[in-house]
Image (tube, rainbow, N blue to C red; front, side):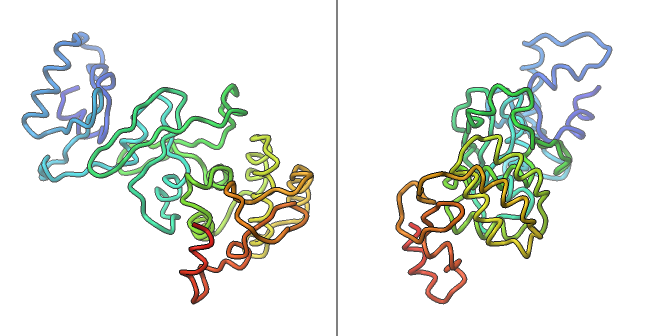
Length: 276
């Protein structure tokens, strides 16, 4: 395959992918590959993102101003790189706010990557899932911006941001973002919540579903299963132990601002202070 043909079908690619694009022809040596890539970078045909990673510049665009899709970049930062947490919602247009921090879930080590104003942050898979063959499931490969992106499903993303709200932007951002999603497979949500083996996470998921039971058509069996795995003792919704009201059957002490969804009220600024 000619280099130009490869670039036309690979908006973001690794050095290894380019090296293997010769098909049945003679394999390129590493030195030849690096030389070819350097030549195309110099000509403005491709961009160097980081070591071993490049982006193709579409015909008619200028390398100095072209911005490759950040999710395609994220999905090539490691062999198993997965767009997750707030970034998974943002990818699907379901985030309340736009972030320039993209969480990349991977088993591999990965330094923080900064490129064109975006920070790509490595996040480890939750400990209970790391040894599972499918890492707990809920990871899909989807077409996006002319390429493939590995991303957590909406159901796993819901559980992930409730399990680690800081990676979802805090309670207000998590609530407002999830409320943009019209439908969840509730059986999958419960499956992912239970897989984390965290009573606190089961309670957080149950609280959210109970609060939105009409909009999401949440059935009693779903809530009962989560409630059976909720904490036996009182726990704070927030790790910073923000005061609130005890909510049964979740045994959660929930800030009033979250219970009332106070960010929807005129006194939003005061509610925001309570969640800060």
